[in-house]
Length: 461
Image (cartoon, rainbow, N blue to C red; front, top):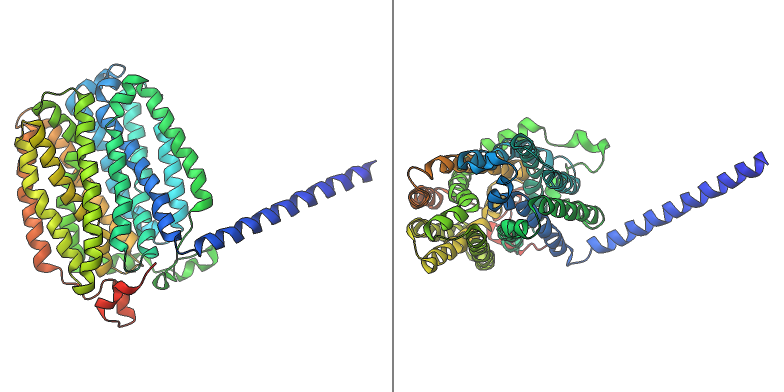
């Protein structure tokens, strides 16, 4: 009987092994067929668009749920305490971003994206169980750490899938996921009022965890010729570019510092509109937050989407005729943002406020769609994730400072005045951008082949 039992165990395990091998080979074969399709790069954009939406939705809905959560956590009734809760995310996110970018240049970006989505979604789920201010502070910090892994990895991956024509549009479309997440986050108070703030956090956390499982099967890594040193397996890790060499290549590039400056300065009004525009509309227009939140976030998100759809194609076409086309498109966007900030701060009429928001959003979308493509003109694909991680870090730290300062200044100087003054900072960045950035190629990796810079745009995904 013992021999019969052993034979049965052997046959069962052999059958399971055959099923596993067949399933693995079938999935691998179908995966290879999928990634070889011409539409797959656009599928990647679509897949990551949803992640981008969840990225901003999970972080942003807290900004309109202050009054709902304050019923159970009284500390959040204080504007300054709420400012700190919003800012702790930004501080952790900003500090972690350069390191997350360096990691993304060296390991699988797919698994960084899947892992970060899973973690921040689990944190969102856990926030629904918070009972005091300190618990929420800790979870917001963990969320900042996990979300910091996403943007450098995602933009680097998309840039590798779109090495020329269509890069600005592809990256811009992905960024619209952030805008839509920001817009939906504006309904946080509405959803929390209909259900509860706890249930709101629970359900969006569950949705994110489920989508992370979907990405495990559909999202795949892309290796460009210039990224041959990116390891696919541990055995190849010794071939990667040393970290210090990557850092030296980035920080030794003068153009990078200029890009970093105008990216950081634009982050000041960018984060101000994300975190404080609902409050500004509530105060200036005498609206309830259930009205001011959606009005502010939807206006910015919809117009930013429009800006991307205008700025992405213009940039991709302009760069064919002039290698500075992406820079000029970005500059036009910044030029639109400057007067709109003054209008946002001073408007006490709903139509004027919405018009100013539309003007700002269109400009911001044109600007945002071209940040990574401009970076690609000066930084090799070997260091792009790290370079963007540094940019993201400084931009978010500026956002954290802005968010914290506005929490205090809102009761003294006034939010409207603060918004109006931000335009002066952007004017300086615009002048610096136009006078100092002169790329030779549409893609820095073209230097290795000695190709004509204006021919870089003919490379398609």
